[in-house]
Image (cartoon, rainbow, N blue to C red; front, side, top):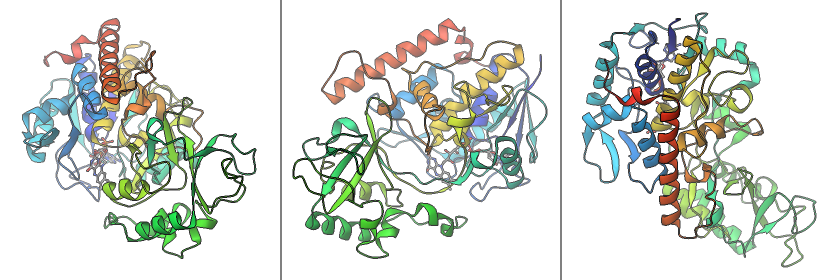
Amino acid sequence: MSKVIIVGGGLAGAEAAFAASKLGVEVVLYEMRPERMTPAHKTPYLAELVCSNSLKADTPDTASGLLKAEMRLLGSIVLEAAEAARVPAGKALAVDREVFAKYITHRLESAENITVIREEVKSIPRERPCIIASGPLTSDALSQSIKEFLGEDNLSFYDAISPIVDGESIDYDKVFWGDRYGEAGKGDYLNCPLTREEYELFYNELINAECVPFKEFEEPRYFEGCMPIEELARRGKDTLLFGPMKPVGLIDPKTGKTPYAVVQLRKEDREGRMFNLVGFQTKMKWPEQQRVFRLIPGLERAEFLRFGSIHRNTYINSPRVLLPTLQTRKDETLLFAGQITGVEGYVESAATGIIAGINAAKVAKGEQPLVVPEETMIGALIRYITDPSKKEFQPMNANFGLLPPLKVRVRNRQKRRQLLYQRALERMKEWIKEHNLEVLSHGMD
Ligand SMILES: Cc1cc2nc3c(=O)[nH]c(=O)nc-3n(C[C@H](O)[C@H](O)[C@H](O)COP(=O)(O)OP(=O)(O)OC[C@H]3O[C@@H](n4cnc5c(N)ncnc54)[C@H](O)[C@@H]3O)c2cc1C
């Protein structure tokens, strides 16, 4: 049986190593720190949390809580360490970052069938199966090698994320369907019309909203092609009216007229559970996004499933290059995991690491890799990032909008989430049993 090679000892790489080793496979884990640091990491520890010490909410009514519950069933080392390093933070799971990272480092370095090598991997290794989990700050040499392997267009260095709102939270009495120059009232886009007064109020709040500064190592000049909406607005009061808020070619069927300005919402999924604010990538702080974007008619009570952002982020075009098993289409013995696949955040990255670890172990044993059921949060997230019909791909975090709807319509949001949560965990338990993965949640040998 061949060894599993993992590049990157971050959150995803640590989970992948742990899962593969529990499935009885030898693992070699390459981590370039401390020899070579990234611009954000500060320590030599595996699974270092580079910024916030919070792993987000841990309650059953949150998508992040569901993701964690599924990961616990899969024996997550990140959540085991988080329990050991927990600090009080209300409903969130926050940790002492040093205790957390040291715990994982010790656990992996002392595991019998895991070898940790501190070395920068400069090109995709030849040994297989191999998982690339080198994260949002993958070293330049390895990035170049990935680009050569996947093709120029399939690796990005910055994300430009527009917010996504829950379709159920839109006020459909105020918005209208319509494509530019198409038939009024019909089309793929939902349009939020603004009067001059509404536009002016929105504009003033937008240009004065509080933003997140770029990190020292980020170069905002790269963003000319995908400017933050507030930055574009600051160029002049009418700039947005000729850009993302241009009304031309759109007729509001209620008035029979072209509105003064329009915000277009595009479906993120076939069922219309999630809508993207087209061209609204932003550096505004999350509470500011909620406050300012709720000034848009139709979005007064919008629930944000994903907030907008723009950061330095190395990620591949997963819908084009990955299978739902996290294997690459081009070479099924090469897998990707973590933030580089276009999932967003510590916990999401760790979750994909577990699945890549399971599937790399399967490849090493000559077995068929697995697809996680889409009713689970992990399965739905992976399905989203590997959906080949997705043309404009931007990173995604866990949210309830990703899950297939319940068979019966449940209006009450809390009740609906409760049922989705229960269904996901039942499905995950069945899947674990079906594929004899119980060993993952047992203690290490
Ligand atoms: C500045 C910054 C702040 C962030 N803040 C947050 C936050 O507050 N909350 C949140 O949820 N997410 C945050 N993120 C995202 C978060 O970092 C990721 O979601 C998470 O760490 C991704 O896990 P990963 O395992 O994919 O990558 P990482 O955790 O980054 O791990 C990748 C590892 O690969 C190593 N590596 C890279 N190249 C090579 C190579 N060539 N050879 C060997 N090893 C290599 C790196 O040293 C690193 O240890 C932030 C990201 C950045 C860059």
